Image 1: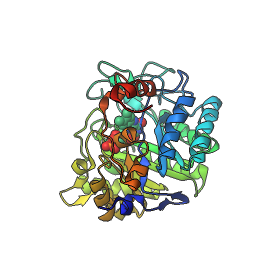
Image 2: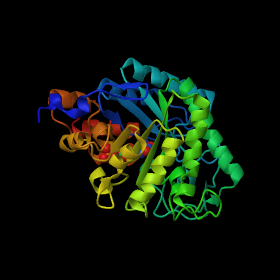
Image 3: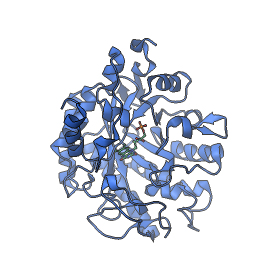
Length: 375
Ligand SMILES: Cc1cc2nc3c(=O)[nH]c(=O)nc-3n(C[C@H](O)[C@H](O)[C@H](O)COP(=O)(O)O)c2cc1C
């Protein structure tokens, strides 16, 4: 294929947001903020490099939304204080100067919190101990704590945290927010049958289990108005359960997607946690999860999972499975991936050692000379 013609290089839009191409940076936690959650100038350099490298959209790492139960890791950034907001403003301004819009991912860790400076206990839909173990790359080890089941008051405070954080994000210069509804964190814990054992209107049927996600999106939408971009990320797999799939397949997916479109989402971002899109995309052996999301909602859909393979990326776009591609590991290995694709330059392979022993920016910097990669 002539890479100049690659379909990922064609422009697009998400609502009012103009995208120079179809290549977005996927959200990636780097546990490199100050201890109080303030983003750093090192983070500004990191995000700006993607914009300089030609990515048309930069999604941030998951950022916590309140001073209660939302924080997931030590050194995770927050968007809950004036200091956080001011530091993010410096970052958005640099990324904008380098030519890309930027979206803040809003994250509540729920039961999958392994570091919260505001408290030691965790809270989630139900008192179910999470599967698997805490994640060493984000500073955790050993089994997860069993969370406390959230009350209605807790849920009101969760929604309030997302809304006030979205307002702060807009003030900080972000072009939109993305609700983290994927990968096993709080919103996904509500969606998931085995972590949600509630008997109230947030538990039981899929329509009930997606209610919290829809309430968060619609509460943000009501506050920020119709034009500000409010996306949501979903996935079947989880950081602590890669093989989980929605029990009702495409029937569940249709209910979930329709509820979120109805709530006012600007786009849906479908992640493939722990697996490539190819492995997680097909529902009921027929439709792709991203293609179905497009069809049900009519909204722009971001696909994720192994999209750094140019042939796969072309297929996903050309066959109508998605509008935009989010690159995680491929962007870490090639912060200038779009430029390389446009110029037909070779692409570097992702080396997991750049995230070891923890996924910090300083470890990635130390890895570069050892791996022979220019600083
Ligand atoms: C170091 C690292 C941190 C991640 N942190 C987040 C995160 O904060 N929020 C999120 O939604 N996904 C997170 N992910 C998942 C990625 O966004 C992406 O879904 C995953 O890497 C698969 O895409 P890829 O094949 O392009 O790498 C993270 C992935 C990596 C490698």
